[in-house]
Length: 352
Image (tube, rainbow, N blue to C red):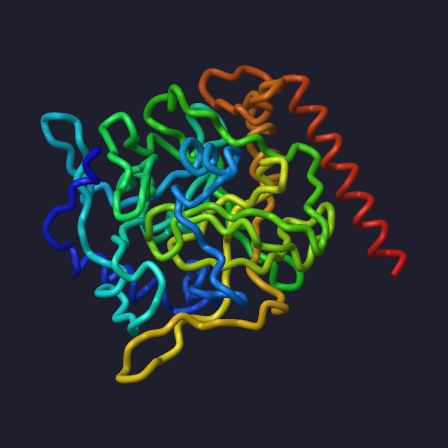
C-alpha cells in the first residue's frame, strides 16, 4: 500500500503556525490559550499505531482520532488519494539530532475525537488559530507500518460544517473551560465514535490513562502510560502527566475501558535550546504535576441543553444536533447525575 502522497513544501505557512504554537502554555493577550506545549515526562512513551498490541487503542486511534488540518494543504487527485505536505518535524522546528520522530511529517494543527457520527470534540482555542471554514478534519493520519503512512482517501477527509458547541473561559484558580464540538459536513459512516464519560466522574489520581492525538502535528501518537496526577469530580478539568506536544490540543484521554474522559487543552513549557542553537524537547521529572485535560462533561451538558440527542447502548455519546426537537430522557438523566456531582463537590469545599 503506498504512503500518503506528499507535495511540495509549505514551510512558510507551517513555520508561521509553529512560531505561534510553540510559545508556551500561558494565556495570550487576546485571551486565547496557547497550544499544549512540547513536554516529555520521564521516558518518552509515545508510540505509533503499528506498534500497538491493544485492539481497543488501535481502534480508537484509527476510527475516532481526527487531525485538524489547514484545508488549503490537503489535495485530492483523480483517484481519490489525498496528498499532504512533506515538511518534516525536524526542519519545521530546527530540532537537534536524536529527537524522536524528527523525520516524520508535521501537518496537524490540532487533534479531535469523533464522539458521534457527525460530531468531533476538540479544544476551543484551536478555532482561534484556524476557524471552522478553513479546517479539514482528516481521519487515518497514522503510520500503518514502519516508514509507511496509511493511505488517506477522499472519504477520510471532512469539512467543518459548523460549530455545535463552543466555550472558552477562565475558571476559579486559573482553570480553563476550553471545548468546541464541530459538526462534520456529512456522517462519518463506518467509523465507531468514542464512548464518552456520562457520569461526570474523572479517573482517580494515580490511575493510568491513554492519550491519543497528533502532538507536534505528527501522525497519530499514543501514550498509554500517562497517569492522572490531580482530579476532582464535578471540576471542569483534571491533570495528567503525559508526553504531549502542541498540535495535540484536542487529543482524547481514555481510561482502561476505552471511555473518553476529556481532551488535552493546556501543557507545560516549550523546547529547550540545545547545542548549536537547535531545539531539544524538554524532559520533566516523571513525578511532575502535568498537563491540563478539559472534561468532556461541560461539552455534553452544552449539547444536551441545546436539544441534542444522546443515544443509548454502545454509542452512548452518539450526539447529533441535526433536527433534534426536544431534549430526550438520556439528556435529562445525564444532567441530573452531573448536577448531583457538582453539588456534592461544592458541599465538600464548603466543609473545608
